[in-house]
Length: 297
Image 1 (cartoon, rainbow, N blue to C red):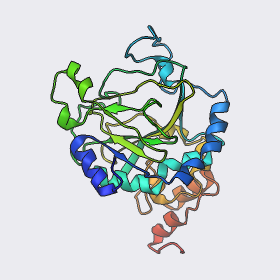
Image 2: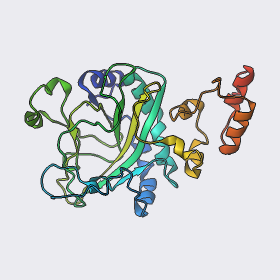
Image 3: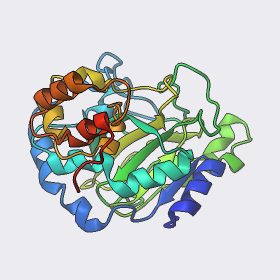
Image 4: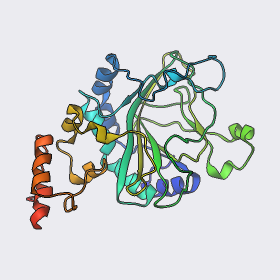
């Protein structure tokens, strides 16, 4: 595991994945416990991945099964303000900027994923993610993207840890890749960052009383429009997203595609309409940029 952000970013760039130990302090992770209880105590499953029709088939062996994803919920979620805010956690954004070597980022996926022992066999085959991009991968600055799991609970060897094959060990036949896997165990608050061209898979639990929770967040450079998963613009009239936006800075909202102050989109009318659409949002940075004066504070 790597706890230095720059070293972890370089590892992600070269090996295709990195595990950043303790990226988020334990106290900040523990603070989401109430939100997780609220979320998973409710019957809110809405087939986030649209996979209900796949069917589970045999419970044996490594397979993709629709119910492996039953514990996935898209963010932001109502009544979960602490959990929602983790997607823009400053240290997470700092690491991604280093890894992607880019200051203008977009979040294109945000979800939380719960797994429970005995619910389903979570064992998957090794795979590369082809469902995040319309184009074949070009893993270079400006053209790559980053997927990540922020561990919200301790993930030991019995708690369904992900397995990955570092790029330096992957130049073998597919059937030999399993012998070269690395087990990505980590304490809560650790971040597993990986690339879609890295062979990886989910695994099952080895303890009957175990569970596992992760925050799923994926990032791309602003200009790399070919990456996508969640369509955040559909939430423009959503009360939960409006609540999430209040208190966020222009830089944080830019992660979801909101133009920064000074962009040609903004004028007196659009800034006023933004204030009306997002009650409580401080629009002074956008308003100040119209006349070139810095906002108060």
